[in-house]
Image 1 (cartoon, helix red, strand yellow):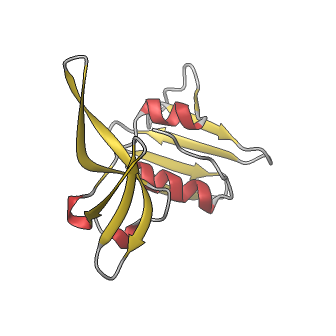
Image 2 (tube, rainbow, N blue to C red):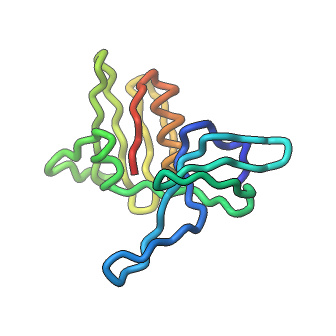
Length: 138
């Protein structure tokens, strides 16, 4: 993953693991500094900061749980030809529809646009593009 694909505040997977209740889980980190020239990122996780190379960074895949944390609501009985869909109702009347086809999510905006996204940082960028200042928390 290239540092130039990221913005401050994006969530990434740097391979950091934590042992909880005998289960090894991934800790995701928030980008708090970027050096696109050298491919170095400053990340923050669990109140710790660390410098990492862009080669050590992977994107975080979107899950249904993440969407619901952000505020998307799944419509009961929402199965259609593309799969279940989730809607987000913004403060100023924006409605974003996200459809899951079994492999990735796709945003549909009611002006004929369609964007496919797979990763949390893409979701963060898209929400900002739509003027929605929503803090995504993992």
